[in-house]
Amino acid sequence: MKSEGKKSVAQAAAPNTLSLKKLREVAKQCKACPLWKTGTQTVFGEGLRTARVMLVGEQPGNDEDLAGKPFVGPAGKLLDRALFEAGIDRSQVYITNAVKHFKWEAKGKRRIHKKPNSREIAACRPWLEAELDILKPDLLICLGATAAQSLLGREFKVTQHRGELIDLPLARHVMATVHPSSILRAPDEETRRIEMERFIADLRTAAQMM
Ligand code: URA
Image 1 (cartoon, protein in one colour):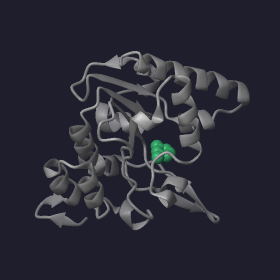
Image 2: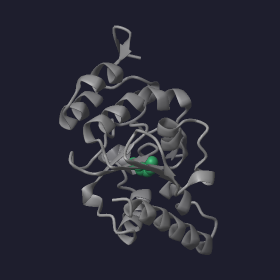
Image 3: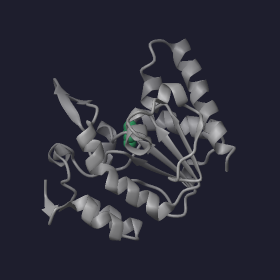
């Protein structure tokens, strides 16, 4: 871990940085956890500084790691469709991840997603806090368990509380729902269709708060 005094790069830079552009620049150097060694690049959040809605995913996948942008792969395409169906304009949303480097393991020639652990999630949290500080969104949506763990605490169960409005000072309205990848992993087409409907319904509930 590269540190400035006792602070990580993220901790040192984040609270003092008011510009998203500058934050993104500094985050390129982040070595707060070992994932920088195997990820191609830091995949920082994307969207307008003035966005009122902030979505938080888990971590970049293979496509995002290569492109340097969040949610551009298959999960991103599904998310785009769900946002559209829910009446949320993606171009008006700020999208980021709880962990900003791709964690993976090799399977043959493929790089397979590996879930980030608590230390990696905690190491990346200052970036997320800084993004929240700058944007001060009206609506914050956690997509899946990793984002929920980072922002809502380890005890929070997405399966039990998805689609509910949570009373926390992180934003005026806070909600968690499933991660779009979980819909892609559904065992059959009918389950996928049902899960997609539930996901859209959660996003619609959130959109109604705006
Ligand atoms: N899954 C995520 O959680 N984030 C991305 O950016 C892509 C896939």
